[in-house]
Length: 385
Ligand SMILES: Cc1cc2nc3c(=O)[nH]c(=O)nc-3n(C[C@H](O)[C@H](O)[C@H](O)COP(=O)(O)OP(=O)(O)OC[C@H]3O[C@@H](n4cnc5c(N)ncnc54)[C@H](O)[C@@H]3O)c2cc1C
Image (cartoon, rainbow, N blue to C red):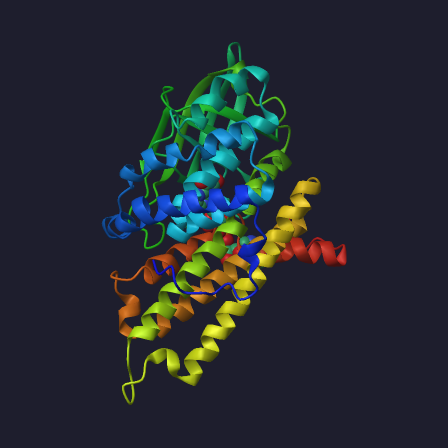
C-alpha cells in the first residue's frame, strides 16, 4: 500500500491526539504486515483468513470493547484503519464487537455479561448476530422465527439467513418472536437442533464466512433470554452500533482505493509517454474522489462527536451509513475504471474492495431503508413499516 501518497488535503489526520495516532499506527502496521499480503488470495479462494486472527487478537480491540475503554472517535478510527485492509475484516470486528458484545452489554444480565464478554473479548469464543431471515431482510418485524416457553426455559424454531461468522460461532444472538414480541436469546451453537450451513458462491465478501442457520426446536434455559431486549428496537439499537463502525470503515476503504490508484496512474504512461496522472480528465476524477472522501470523513467525525455526547438519533446513523457506503462504492468503481483492464485483475486490491463494498452498501440496512429513515425525520411521515 503506497504510504507516500498524500490524499488528506484538509489535514484531518493532524487533529488526532497522541493516543489516537498510536492506535492508527498500530492497526495500520497490522493491516500492512498481516492482512494485505494474504487477503486477496482468500478472496480468490473464498476462504476465511485464519492466519490474521492471532494479530487481531493482539490488537486487543475486543477487550477494549468489553471494558468500553475506547472513545467513540478512536473506535471509529480503528474501524477506518481495519477497512483500509478489508471490509470483511472490519465486519468481523463489527459483528463480534458491536452486534454480539453490544447486545450482551446493553441487554444482558450480569451473569450473561460475566460469562460471555471476557471470552468474546479475548476471541476465545466467536459470536454471530442472527436477525435476517430468508423471507425477511429489510423488514425484520415480519420474522417467522418463534420462541415458546417450556418448563425449563424456551424452545426456538426458525431459520436465519446471511449470518456473518455463523459457521464458526460458539454463540448466536438469535432474535425470535415470543408471544408476538421480538426478543433476543443467547443460543450456544452446540445445542441439539441448531445447525449452520455456509453460503458459498458469493462474489462479494468472499473471505467472510456467511451462513444460513437452522433452529429446529432448539431448547435453551430460561437464562438464555436477554432480559433487557424487549422488542425489535433492541436489535435495531445493536445495529446502530454496527452502522457507526461501517460509516468509519467506508472511509478507510475509499482512501485505500484512491491511494492505490494515484500510485498506479503516476507509474503508467499513455499518450506521448506521459503518466496517466497528468491527464486532465483523470485529475478531475481524482479531485472528485478526494473531495468526497473528505466529506465522508467529516461526517464520520461528527458522528463520533455526537456519539460522545449521548445516544445517536437513527436518522444521524442512517445519513452517515447511507452516504459513506454509497460514496465509497462510487470511489471504488471510479478507481477500477481508472486502472483500465488492470482494474479487474486481482494483482490490485481495488476490484476486491469494490465487490466487498456492494455488501457494505446492502447489509445493516440498505440504502433505501436508510433514505426512508432520513425521510421520516425530515417530514415526520414514516413511509415504511
Ligand atoms: C455478506 C452479508 C453478510 C450479512 N450479515 C448479516 C448478519 O450477520 N446478520 C444479519 O442478521 N443479517 C446479515 N446480512 C443480511 C442483510 O442485513 C440483509 O441482506 C439486508 O438487510 C437486506 O435484506 P434483503 O437482502 O432481504 O433485501 P430485501 O429486504 O429483499 O430488499 C431488496 C431490495 O428492495 C429494497 N426495499 C425493501 N423494502 C423497501 C421499501 N419499503 N421501499 C423501498 N425499497 C425497499 C431494498 O432496499 C433492496 O434494494 C448480511 C448480508 C450480506 C450480503
